[in-house]
Length: 356
Ligand code: F6P
Image (tube, rainbow, N blue to C red):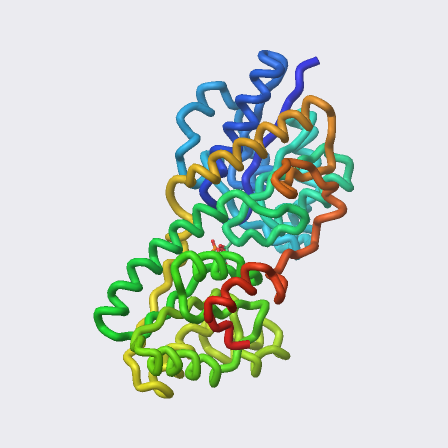
């Protein structure tokens, strides 16, 4: 019996999505030959809601291992609103189920992060055969040690810090670099350690402004006038700790704390301070070798799940092994950086200040 497999990529893109899609497809064709048909769904859940899809051919999956972004397109369909019927009167969940049935799918692969997995679980609970694959540069998906896209972003972030380092040292300046990661600080922690940052501010460890100035001045006392400060996009100060995210943004008048950090360092230390935000640059371009391998492993494992009829799961890596978790066990759970994480301890041992 022919299997019909739908694939979509949802949420923010990242390097490795195409490598994962290719991994699934090649492994499926290898196992099942003509007994499998793959349908590419456009722009994430939006395409499933609107019935936008096409039958893919083998050649569609050629030459995409190294390509950044996603050949299928992606979009954000916030989970909070997925069950809400808006002014357009579209019942998004009903449409997705209908289109799955119209496409006569045997299963649906959803490549995404936290929001994607919540919707995947919802669809699974509604009777669809769903398999998730964990991607995000934020690395904050519960149940997997690592997500693909993360290590490429670490490489790019590290290169950014390396380049800031030389100009910071030449000008005896403080350079503040804002690294993506709204809820979790994995990317800031890894790029900070890899790039030799002096201060790292994470959303998991609310910081004190006074301690930032102290850390910068301590470096000056030790003969280093320049400093590198990594600020996670979602970092916030101790005084903002009790506020909800929206309140913090409203009180600051800007989405991140970076401008305040820059102003504070300048005022308190008298050292010229500049900032830069690589932003989506961290998410673009070709996946690293590590992510190509990881995404391929995840894709091949997903193909095995399809062949074995294992659904309602998401692929993961645990202790160096590729495994699967039940969607219902992981959906809605986060994976923040633990305050006592080994890499936090390593960073502290080097004298990197978290200022918490
Ligand atoms: O991919 C996750 C992420 O990179 C977060 O770190 C960031 O806050 C968010 O995406 C921004 O994405 P966009 O601007 O594409 O919605």
